[in-house]
Structures are given as C-alpha cells and as structure tokens.
Amino acid sequence: MKTGGIDSSRIESMLAQLKAAAQRPQTEDVSGLASAAGMPQTPSVGKASFADALKASLNQVNQSQFDAEKLGKSFAMGDDSVSLSDVMIAGQKANISFQATVQVRNKLVSAYHDIMNMQV
Image (cartoon, rainbow, N blue to C red):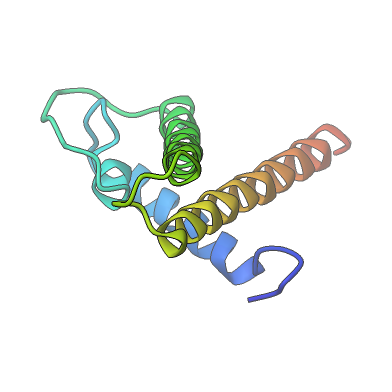
C-alpha cells in the first residue's frame, strides 16, 4: 500500500465487488454491501441502484468518522475504558475509509470526464 494514497488494486477490487453485487439479484438495502460493511440485512424485493450503494458507502464512512471522534472525546474526558490505542486505531480506520472514498470519487469524476469528452 502506498503511504500517500490508496493502491489502485484496492480500488479495482472494490469495483469488482460492486460489479459482482450488481449482477446478482439484490434487495433494496444492498445486501451484498451491507454484509461486507457489517450492517444488518433485511430481505425485501427490488433492485439496488448505484445511488443507493453510494449512499450506503458514504453513510458507513460518516459513521466511522463519528465513532472515531466519539472515542477521541471520551479519551480526552478521562474515560478509563478507552485506551489511546483504540482512539488511534479508530482514527486511522476513519482516515483510510475517507481516503478510499475520495479515490473512488476521483475515479468516477475521471470516468465522467472521459465519457463527456468522447466524440459522438
């Protein structure tokens, strides 16, 4: 893994997972992504859209940042049940998930520009 960013192999792996999830029957809560994210699954009928998958991913990143901030505040307030290593690990997980989200966004924007610049 690069120190300045996310490996392109990880991004390609995430895209492959999204493609695989898009090709099998889905529920409205994006069950494939929900199970990978550790979120509860509820069976329902329907097909997941890209917007739903993107929203679920963004919500997961937001939740990890919120949890890291909450742990940091607890540690700063002197909570003995929270160790410094827990705070640092949660912060790094939130940072890595945010960096991955930014890299996926950059790839999507790049693909959008490539499509818009195609001659018809």
